[in-house]
Length: 161
Image 1: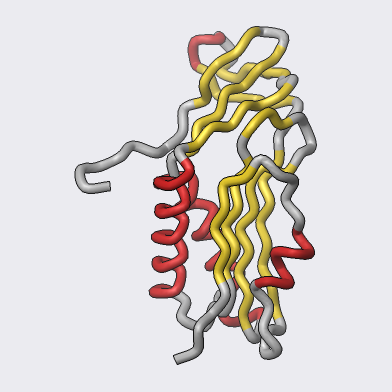
Image 2 (image 1 turned 90 degrees about the vertical axis):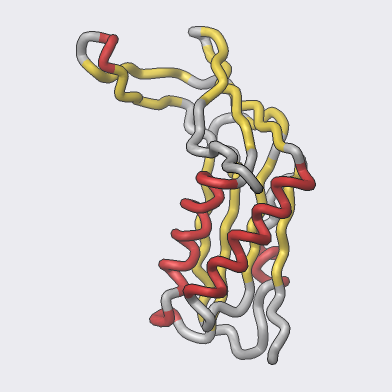
């Protein structure tokens, strides 16, 4: 059985796409699907209590926090789930930045590599970001002219997690 490259990281450092893709690329790799989430400077949210149902929020910066050992363990779980669904995926990189991040700054990266683009590699990367948002304990506080608020995510730990 071939050992495929993986990297999981909670970091305060800038995300280096070229280094990460190089790390998860094999001689047989022909495709890389990459998702990068970024800080928005302006967000429109659905809020029924506003009357119109939508409000616009300006963001000066986001502050991300994580409990690194647990977050990286959950990232490994996400990778195992990807491998179970898409066994042709070769390399996997899952990286989340923490700290104070300003608009237009990449905050998260999910990358999956495979021999060909038509192997499910796009779906694997999409699954990776969706599962990260569901189960990896990362918290973010939005700071802007209207004040600051912890943004609710979808992560709710279940017994045994």
